[in-house]
Length: 360
Image 1 (cartoon, rainbow, N blue to C red):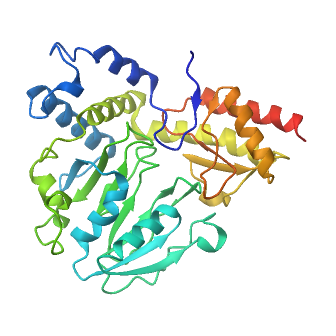
Image 2: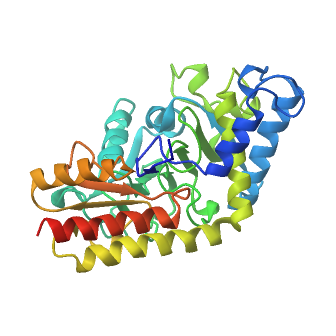
Image 3: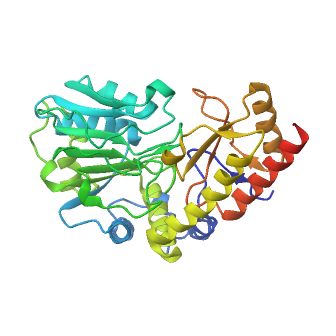
């Protein structure tokens, strides 16, 4: 069985080199005589894996010394609660609603305090990013929250909101490591790794040290306190050891590709092939305002639900997997993360052209 082109939004495609390397080390990691998924998280071998992974990530993102890198569990969804539990000192926060995940995060935060939804693009089914240059930021807000790249709707913040001095918290699950980023603009930048970095089960939180305190909301569980994990260097309890090991391999793969500048260039080149086709196609159309298009997730439709279903079915038969859009929006979606090769996008566009000719 040859490998398919996997356009899944997550868990998603991983670099083939990384999978091959992991396969080679599956039974015997570097002469230890065991697999990484069997070894103690307190062992010297695993300590090296997690330390090196953190160093490589710091190098890739130029993470300053006053930020901690935490490898946690519970996915991005657990952060929806962990953030307010740790940061909502005045019990008030501002949320910008650009899709399903920001919406869920805001709803969760309401359990802990007042949530002010200071901008939203829900009026047009989240097909654009609202203007965030002059927001009504609340005076007592502890932070301003965004989901930077919206996996379901295919939008991306090209400019960060002006938070008027308030701490910016960003969920970057689906654009993690896809381009260079200035970490100093954020208080917390976090993401589940299963879209652009590794296997499901790890969430990486990059957090400024002044936000890590014992002063959390009453009743916050030990496991949901950032200080617990920062003090224990992500080893307070057994972490998702194998997941972290694969993330570490992906960081090395990105370094070998030339780092985040090179990644951005490759991603722009891939996305252009698909967007250029959509812009001139007579059958397919993109659903996002051009200025806000994501490089990672590209939703598109034919305008006919039956034709959409036919496209997804025939694409699958042609080795193009997971092109069905999210159940909340329908249509199609191609997730073209870092590990999706250029040839994969070319194959998709080639198939779309053929389908268009046959179904006009």
